[in-house]
Length: 256
Ligand SMILES: [Zn+2]
Image (cartoon, rainbow, N blue to C red):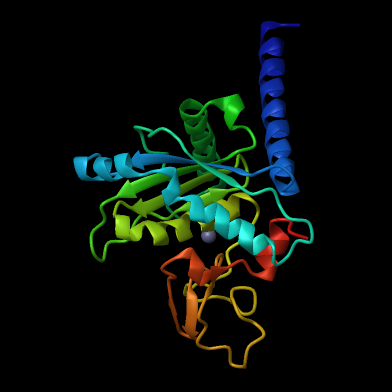
């Protein structure tokens, strides 16, 4: 075989192995038979001392309600209980994950960004150890009133989430809503809101059996991300206790 042939063979081998590992991870988490490992990697998004002090004070207890929420919601759909998910707080990462291309982005831009993100994960996590674990990179910002944070995202390929969150203790409960939303994306759940950020009926509603016209709702379906108060007004839930996992999301994450 020529040198070029050898190189192509090795490259193909690497790509096939990566694709196989990615499918295995997806299959593995969809079983719900072993505890789902959710690993939080904090990142100082503002590179200042205030955000660092907030990160240094974080403990795993600040995130355990995420596993409690998933466990408690699963009981509404599954006859056999799931293994209780485990949350781990990992080391802080010094650099931020690559930002997704701004829309309208070409398929090539998106593919390149997704490769860069995989490389970022590769460089900052223990590869073999983190296989089959959901890796959530939480970028903390002090935040300014009226200035929106970057959009958070969760990818099923590679079980990777990037969450932009507020470095304020009073925001912890709402940060956990955003973290859980992105975590469920990594497990295959889709968004359930429309172009105006309004929850879509019925899959984006927490209570679908109540009286017509279904408004106002008192809880949010987690993948709709908002509580529909009227057909044109919805608010973000303040904590996971104000959220549910709806039937469609439950189906998407293999709770059936
Ligand atoms: Zn989403």
